[in-house]
Image (cartoon, rainbow, N blue to C red; front, side, top):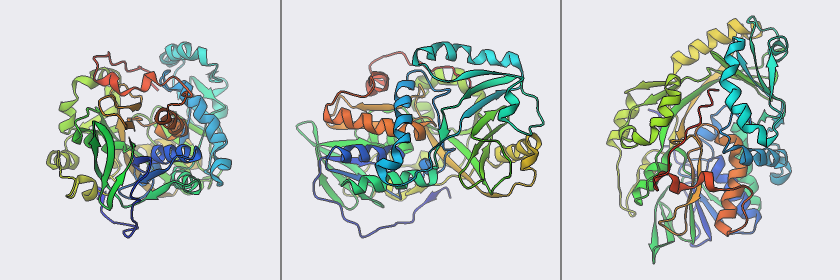
Length: 443
């Protein structure tokens, strides 16, 4: 099975009332709780399993500006500043380090794929720069392959996913947020059309605002309250190794490989741009929305029919608020990695870097990525239901941008001047006839 049903903290109870309820305890949810609590807002976060146990603790850990959709760059620049101050804010080291990120290409002519992006982001004055074939080897010491060049951003870096979500959550608790684990939110009630009460498996919570930060579960939850939130899933997988001596610094990826240095001396290793995609009912429900993305990214997708196809076909589409929901049945999704992909990644990294020839893999981990049609998130109020907000669809790069997303959501809820223009992240773009624009980055 790829779902864990273990229940922890079973005897926790929920408060009878609060100002804001957050649905989902991934890094986006805890970051939102942190900034609301920092502003003195009463907030309760409900997580159906344990904090960060799905995608938030099982990703690569990159914190990057390079390669992002230009619409995300302003928020990501701000997030980078927040990462720099996160240890002080939460009172603990979340593993954030600025070590640089490099994209490698085999041939100089391949650099053309980045020209449009580099031109588009000139306005943001990033430190991303072209690296020629004579210099690129300095970012891949000992490599057996002669690269044709690449891009490098010295100010990018990483944090440690397996600790960051928990520590940010702890920081939110210190500021007054209430976090209840093993507590699925089944839905919410309205009065006069506005959010009035959240219904959880552990009781009801009177509130004025609900933030849906449920990752891959967000589309199902939204549909249960008649809100369209187009979202599909891709499988991401990586290997965590024991310490490797004299390996490359920072993070990097190129044809057939990807790596991320860890603070314990080990590495996260995997394949660049190789994602299994299960064909499920939502694949047909939202097919029209995803046509622009398919045109740009189909080469990186490995379509398949499998266990997840059957599981989602049988999953409930609606449920009573006084009965068991799918979120209680599927506590924690821990999918099986794409082992063929990781087997090839092992061959590739050992061939490329002799330092990895005797690498020992501690574990192979995988997670479902929540992907929006244009690959940028929704961070927005839902116009049809006052008091309902969505923060989801981060499309595989939510870990790095999460602090900024949490601050932005807190500002939207409180009616404050937002740190960046929130218009690109509005939910209404998927229901008002706006043209879906998927940026063909090609990274």
